[in-house]
Length: 86
Figure 1: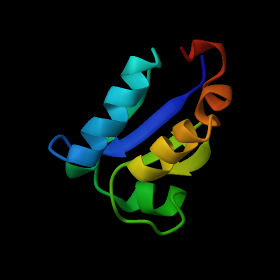
Figure 2: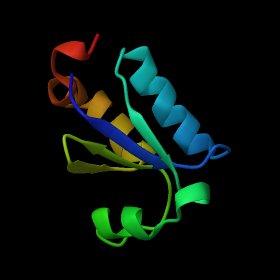
Figure 3: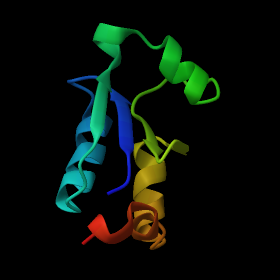
């Protein structure tokens, strides 16, 4: 199973939407709540992006919620997720 990381907040609707998609695909992920941990690490890893969510698969920056859904629409998300994708 790939390492999937999401920098998010608890109340962000885009964060919730991204997590729902990954859950629907049966993917486990690690969440970093930037309200509790701060955004500095996320901003550094996301090349200056300051909005949430910021999503990483196997250390590769995917982008935000819209980027995740665009990958899915283009049938490029499942190969990144490997065998765990439905």
